Image (cartoon, rainbow, N blue to C red; front, top):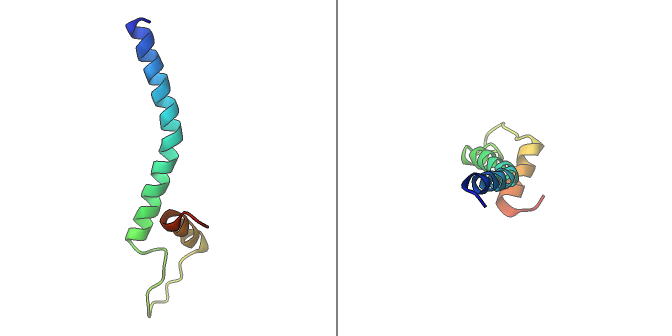
Length: 66
């Protein structure tokens, strides 16, 4: 196997691994940011009601369940 062929195979493997992990990393980064700012739950005495989608994805992020 030549150097160019091995580099090409490494890039191909890197691309497929990135296709698998990128959505997962983005999901946990976004939902972690939402939780950091507390947008997934309402505070006492506040009129803020979080949207159901935020509540559900926060539950998926924290506990791994829907």
